[in-house]
Length: 96
Image 1 (tube, one colour):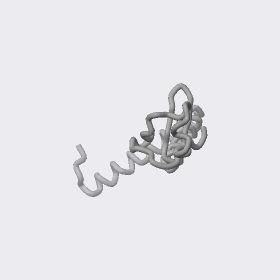
Image 2 (image 1 turned 120 degrees about the horizontal axis):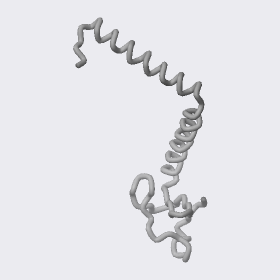
Image 3 (image 1 turned 90 degrees about the horizontal axis):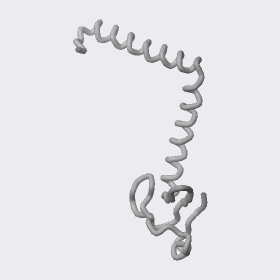
Image 4 (image 1 turned 135 degrees about the horizontal axis):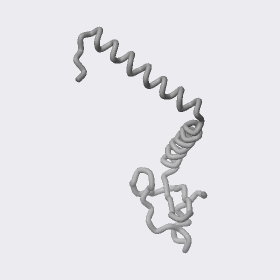
């Protein structure tokens, strides 16, 4: 991963398509450039947003592999569903 400066855009290795991978808008200034099997070009702010989401998804995937976390997550979902049902019943709301 590197920074693509406007002066680099004429270089042979620079990507020709400068549409942001994250938001799809044209990149006019500095860009974050990542060459792998695909070429990713992003606005600096979009690169930051994507990185945060990747880190969060990575953490979620790591925790999902742990049986304790799976059981805990299921209990939380069941608790909130039961609580919501009790509140709707107490308020006389038909949620069907």
